[in-house]
Length: 317
Image 1 (cartoon, rainbow, N blue to C red):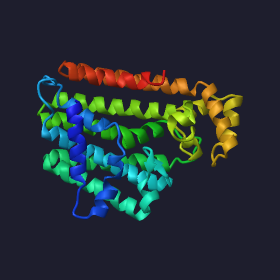
Image 2: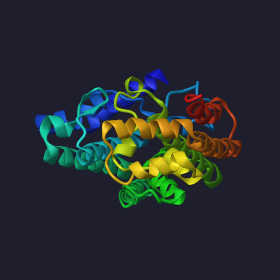
Image 3: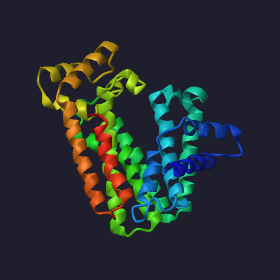
Image 4: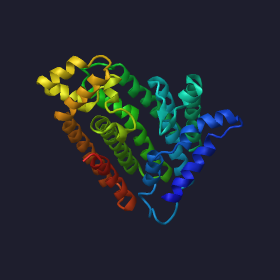
């Protein structure tokens, strides 16, 4: 996998290289900042569940499919940072902070375009799949935005949003791995289901960490989502539980929080049952991911997928 990761890095940089050095620099900014590359890794591992993953490196199609998904992810981050007016990402200046909003938007669009071009090279089914996924990312983000500062946001809205803006791209990463490997429809469906479940665990865990982690652990102020009016599962579950603490929290929410309110809101959510409710729901999705693995060929790659979903949840325990 180490060699395949190096191939992913090289292929990503090659994918955004253009005759315009200025655009190349902007488009490669977050690639050079590093990252776990979870989506390409998922595509690669998914492509190996029907083979001996130690026998040969990933195919070029698996590498290209994985970087198409990662470029979509990076493009969405460029756009997210503009919307959030973020100043740092992965320990470096955001593109919008360094070059401006217009350049960030256009560079994000460029990354999406390059991802689409790569997907098209893998066939019409992959191209159509990636196009639908980009649409689902937008739908998930819109669902979140329409409930900004909404204390009565239904849990169903939260789940719909994270399935679109996060889980759909993991689902597509896994599905592309199955498609380029030529697996039958039942196995491709199992991989798709796995990717969705993994992505749901990933986002719920990320939202839990925004509550329970320290500022230094996160690299940003804890409770940032609450400050921005994005009420995630731990907060919604705390409000739904009722009681004096929930009532106090409700008085503060529905508007931007100052530093004192932010600290108090975090204390309330941390002390209640909302975090545990979110853990319980994440555990349900871990079970769904493991069930999907049971419908796949069984080898070391499948076991790696099975272990990965549980490892996400175990990271907060």
